[in-house]
Amino acid sequence: MMADRIPTPVLMDVDTGVDDAMALALAWTTPQIELVGVTTVAGNVTLDQATTNTLRVLNTIGATDLPVYRGMNRPLVRDHFDAAHFHGNDGLGGAKLPDRDRSVEAMTAPEFIVQSARNYQGSLTLCFVGPLTNLAVALSLAPDLPQLVDRVVIMGGAFQVPGNATPTAEFNIAVDPEAADQIARSNFDVTWIGLDVTHSTKLYSEEWKQMSDAVSGGTKIVRDVCRQAFVDRAEGSMHLHDPLAVGVVLDQSLVEVERAPVQVDTSVRTTAGATRMMKSAARPDQNVAIKVDSRRFRQMFGRLLNVPIDDRE
Ligand code: RIB
Ligand code: CA
Image (cartoon, rainbow, N blue to C red; front, side):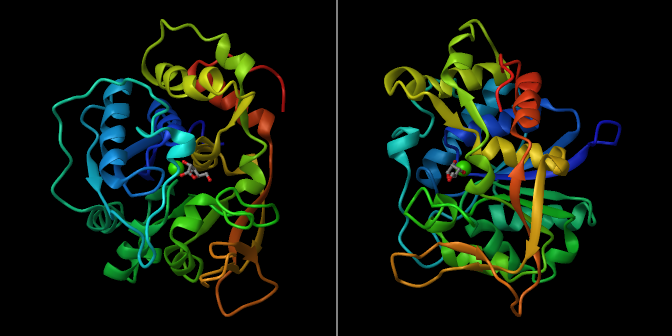
């Protein structure tokens, strides 16, 4: 737990979507994280939409001066496909968040990632919750990047469980397998937060329905972006995929990891984007989350965002 430490500098890369919005709110709300900037990437929705959504979310939570940098508008090699079927065509579940006449910075996302790593001299944590395209490009710009950052926490992968974009691949990896493979081969200190653990960390509709409409900031984000799922689609729960990655930035002890080389399927077969731990390989071991204390994470989520979380796992 980082309770008494100085704030950790964190750069978040997002494809703002519903759970990205909640992850941004969680990271901004906690004093243990010093958000240094946000980079955007094509994923759940187009790059333009993800960037607009990110600015709207930051405006809503009061992060009106937090710089935003546009990244890659398509995967390294393959055509982009989105997840609008889940996040809504607007990517925010229909939430009407206030616009602000603020624009993105002139620098591109990969350049900002490299610049920030150099500026923070080894103390920066990267939290990536969308396709890994920007990180792969940043690594090409600066091959020494793994030595320049402290940790990389990635929401991505499905190592010992089925996928959600295809039967074998999790969405963030399925969109850009080549980018993910470059990260898996790298010497970053990576912790992969895959569906293996995020499928246990849910927000339940009964909890959401207890929330008042008269809320603001991060609480308003949760209330507004989940409405479409819990009301229009009458879903019983929502996976807190991206918020768990932020939780692990805050407290790595939330998850139990296995260390192994990670392989990403970059074939043209239907298994493209599949991720697995290998017995041995000519690539470094990385951390793969295999278990999570979902009750403790849900309590953290509820406490920091003022959401009525009960005692369920
Ligand atoms: O598979 C879940 C991931 O894909 C989350 O990051 C969600 O926002 C989507 O990008
Ligand atoms: Ca995401």
